[in-house]
Length: 354
Image (cartoon, rainbow, N blue to C red):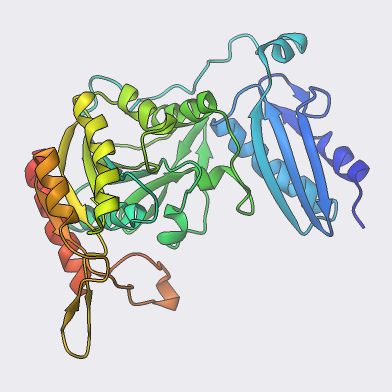
């Protein structure tokens, strides 16, 4: 059976890239838990959310599995300023962030579209993924940031199994269905929980903009976590020109809570492109009869309150599963629901003006 001592010994060969000392020596190995052949680690680095972290992540997993682990759960933290200073500080000449073009520069012409909701469980990520793929099908250059840090799901929804590549300190996103994708899910192992403080979340989001080689984009879709917490506030601060789509269900409570997200957008001068009412009804394949499972009127009330349009109503449904080209949440272009998303994307292009 694998022991803690064996794990620690394996990790002595992994260096913190900013301190040029191994993560055991720096005190960066915060936690080791072993259950059977499953190992759970918490590791602190001088900097997180960088291309170097991705390399370290892969090295750690490889080393621990090489020592006999069957699976490795990995969480990252940051060393304190005192700890960094104690170990000699950052290496001289090392930049705080990788060089290269930034999506946040004034010269960048990408349209930012945040997809948000007041509460979880309304299908916000499904809308984000299908909006992104529908825009790409209409010839647009599209990226998506899975900014739902705690509930990241975009890679699974799109059937993505590979990881981003790192070339000369730049992270190259994974591309699927013509959409470039970056997600917090790429920075954890074995679906480990993300337990981070608010400031660290902001740093990770900032690195998603600055350290990823996005290339030229027409639209960058941001799948935000529900509500108006730290991540939503950081996005509003980073992206003063961001546009927003608010997702709700027909249920009165969902619409009521979604209004808070809309109010936040208005207060920060973000343009609301419109409302998507998800799970609007269930349509029987046998009879064509519609059943309004979650009631009616939520989308209308929300659009009236926020003085915006309803971009579309999405019925309850499930994409056809193709085992050879697996993407459990992406609708085909010729699917009935896929066609609704096509219409929503067309309206977004018209309203966003690009």
